[in-house]
Image 1 (cartoon, rainbow, N blue to C red):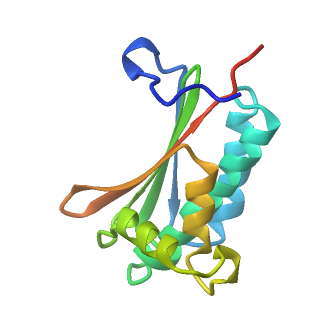
Image 2 (cartoon, rainbow, N blue to C red):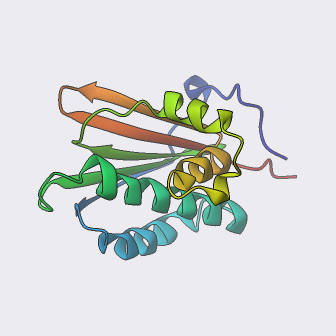
Length: 156
């Protein structure tokens, strides 16, 4: 069972924050997934860990391939992971152009084709289905943040 979506940050404190900075290189994905599994194992049950790893993988890959496609590999991508009692936040920071994620997802959902049959954009569906909240925001003139929130199962 998953907690209701009305979980307020006001009544939950941050258990542990983590940050990793990598270059804009798809080969960094292996390092990121090893790092994430290491930090997340104490906080996440196996199914949630797997779902978060897949969402993180898709988010990072999209950042390298699209948001940073015209930027040098030296431009950093910053990943923040924040663990709370009932959820985890995964934030991927980039310096690419703004992308209207909500509009793109709405457009894709209007199509009559199954997401797995698409040439591209499958990763957006995966991130949307594997997380409880998904957003992409412009933070300032040259920074964006892909925000993924995953609620944790209630312990019985």
